[in-house]
Length: 458
Image (cartoon, rainbow, N blue to C red; front, side, top):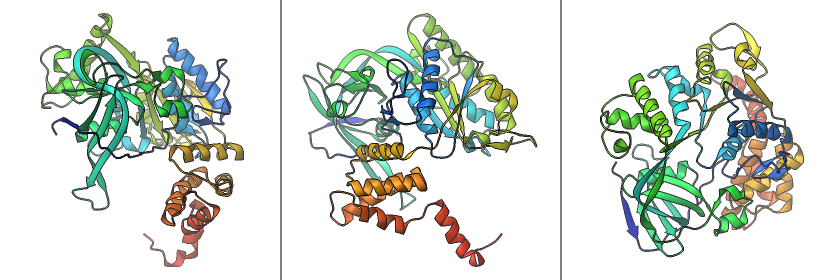
């Protein structure tokens, strides 16, 4: 689909899109590396956060190589949140790729190729180029969706309207589907300062505007704040261009001739990505860095449910972490002792012993009541939900006794129930009602046992 940008008259409605970890801005450590109970969107898990902080310091000092991180803990104890926080600490443009170990198993692509592709998506490079861009603080954002062409129960992104503001100018743009998808994938919202390449539509995040309501309302670290841009929204400037090695792989595969900068824009993909393409990209990236025209940003590859990887995948990762072009690899698991997939050997966490020897392991603990309460308050603020004290107490009780994830899910559903009855706040009655309508895992098991004789068996 061709990229297009069209300027509109200012009339935009507002859309809020909330992800599970959009509130996380960092590890929440003080200047001495000590974890603050509630900071930067992180709550509790002080020991795990301080351990991650030491790793971040070593990475920034160039002292981390040939190792990977394992995060081990029960379900719902913030393993993914910790990985996201590590990526945020490394920098706002550091790539963060999250995947489940189950995704490596495909009938069409080899397991090692899936892992290699994910690793290259997690390595960014910054290149400077004089380009014509749209630049400014997002003051209004509206993503327009339409019906899915095949599935009537789904909606797909069609386009987006954004208003960009500088100290001297303001313009409203209508952007195409590919640009809208970039905005959503990068978690961009009102208050962010972005650049959009006028020719290609590539979106780059510059930071969070220090003049925005978002920066003033939330506890955002000063390292993320940038001043609102000056001058015109559309301008010629030296463009800081952020790509990943996977982006460059696709570009070189489309157009094998010419220099690296000349293949950034346009072209039709005609060749599959093979070892020769990867080797060419690696060489050109190294040349750019040596010439001072590029800077590498090794990002974070987070693999959840990593115990589902097999012995071949573990061997590949063990070799990959020794490469000079390798991201920070974080494996997460909620297993104790488990069989290593592809073998008959049982091992701690379901990982081979030689991989465990080359990893640092961070443990996460079950949240206490105070932490559950703070997490629910943060999620409510992030989703724009008002709770009365009784509803918050009830959700906290559910989170402690049953599941934090279940409590967070009930939070959103209870808010919808409150809106349906015309209420402005979620009450304890709303929580009780949706808790009665839905089941957590233990209730679902009891429900199935009740009707076990009527269930189908295969």
